[in-house]
Length: 410
Image (cartoon, rainbow, N blue to C red; front, side):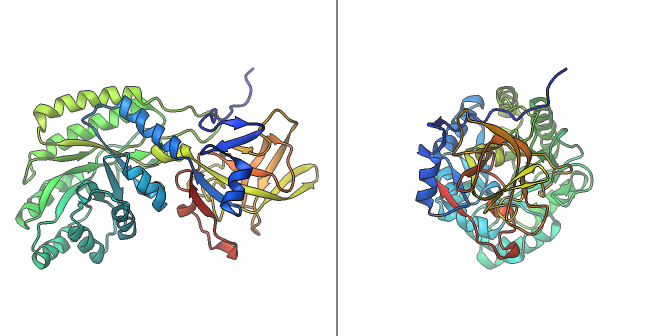
């Protein structure tokens, strides 16, 4: 008989003298430096190491893009811009952050199913690549081209006729608001050429948060074959081929870290095929969560310890309003615990089963449900791992009027 599944080891942060170390700084000292809790902390060294590990696994010819929707904190985006080949944005607000961070406009792409006319104009004026997702966008960009005297750079986001199997969130296949159905693409490509836009390639994104290398390889191969078929209808040679990302990180008990090596080996084969099939094309892999998720922690302070009918509750000053994902209210069907620890009691002291809850007047404000944790009380710091992606920017920070959280890059 086997025991219950446990979380994958969180080895990206060291422990010294019973305290978690983030960015080379003991947790309690980091909290004093930040000035208040709750806060998110992102470790520069962990970010750099993750990019380096992918560079080692992937062929040199593959371009690595950071999808900044995962974490748009300006200082973090600036750091990532110095490490990766390009930035993918999903709004004019993100576009401004990317450009302010020093990203090369030629290596910035803009995706999203509901781009406003003003956003399309801004993107065209900036010279970034626009992943068109509707005929309306092409019509608007034709007007922008006449107004500004430029040929807006465009790629076509394709809604393929397949899905990324085993992905946590499916972004393509079947009826979707994302991209343009593959059967409509040939007609759309004719319109792009007729309206004088600068066609550069295709964007195919099957899904996200996948921990199965074989599924990711299959999706990349299908995306490549589909792009090759569509290239025959294109008004210009393909120069940009974004095969999406989909690489996940382990959040929940029983999940194991993804091995990028077989994905890199498959990409090497696709790069070799492209030398003859699409000789002008750069293959792009777009990743967000995988690049930044494991480099971040959410830190909140225990303000009360309560025992209700035998169950221990650690009440903290942070919760779902700062970290909606960890509370289970950002896409989970059945709530599961993120990896959580008492960061100021990381040694071998006594443990107990406890729940970590926030200060909000709702039972949904739950960061850890009956987990084995070090015995803790007021003043201790609770750490939620795997918090570098879809944290502060994906949470309702104004809910119930509590203070916003702080974000730091260390």
